[in-house]
Image (tube, rainbow, N blue to C red):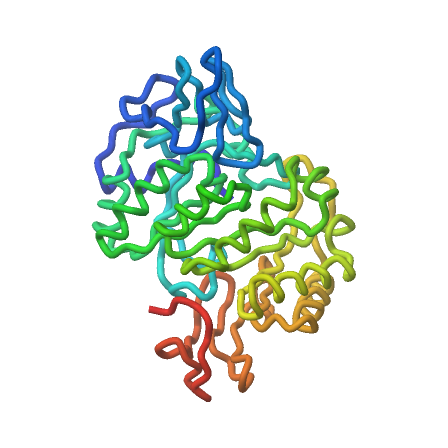
Length: 364
């Protein structure tokens, strides 16, 4: 969870950056959007996500980060992060992508969904003017990672899709410097922007929040089908993919729906895609809902394995055996975890050190 009191400490200390700014115009926030088209009367249509907002001059789209300026669409959060930190990659969670490494995390305000349980709602549901931000061009983000010798830059906390151009420019510069990039996203993005993103980043974790249109409509304020298409697009690319499903009591935890979802994952994405079932904690507009019982999560893991998924995890329950990675061939304990820490790693050159079986992931 991110709270504004900790914003920019990392960047300010390491880059001697300018102090945070609030509502003034940023000199670098003039990046024209990559995916939109112009209409009559200076209207523009955003083509980045499935909402396809039609935006009048002087107005912003649903995500509050893309503004029509005299008939052209601009990202107003480009180079304007509102949160940065240094954290383990396991917190993403990404378990099969450079385990044990640190990541520089980065976010701007904004989101194109309205999840009622969002833990970072103070940022994701905010406008640029509501939260302090800081001028930080892409080159400075990459320089920060290089200076700290952190091998990963991770776009997370809010919804990276809404700061697409900023993310893409950072990723391209980072790759040129040998720094990996990862995206933590709800996957609510159109196919063409996603394909371009896959060509630039190294890992994408998608929150598959539920498996019914009703859940997406009632809880997330969005639709399911584009997220499923996004999962398939990433799976067909060379980009590493992991999935997270936040298990919410009485809303998306019934075994029949979970069984259907896991079968779909196996048939469309493959049986080696890591899937994380994480514990729900009350927040935002669902503070009166109970946390997910551990027994429910363990039942969900059993359902997933019964459908042939090989790497299934429980999240937000430190110390549970389902935090660990086991070899699907010999059953050996490959990676022992407790929370975000790794106690043992028996994956050597992408293979089980006990039986030599190939283990899907990015290990070095």
